[in-house]
Image 1: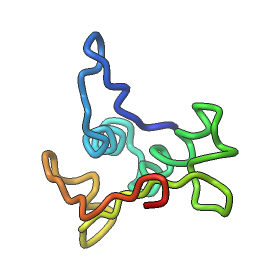
Image 2: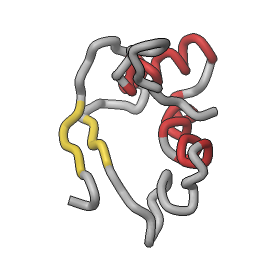
Image 3: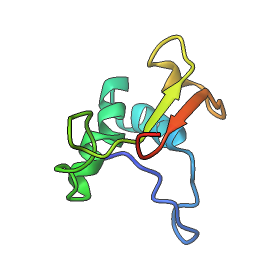
Image 4: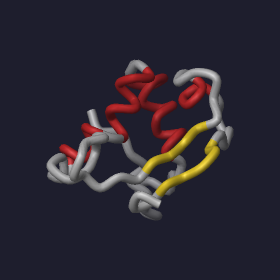
Length: 92
């Protein structure tokens, strides 16, 4: 299952990917690992871009979020938390 914000003013004004992951875990019963796959590999596949993005592989484009958390579960537990430590876009 792909997990995303689908941010748009008409039907989904949510901009927080962490909140979308929380909803996926709480409302749809996804594990933390399934939530992470939902915002990476499965999202890329849903967009028809799995050949170029979505997983860490040589030759694929890469944007990274580096989170300051004690465990992966912390990414979906706290509403409103902003544990982003650093972000890398286009490999920089």
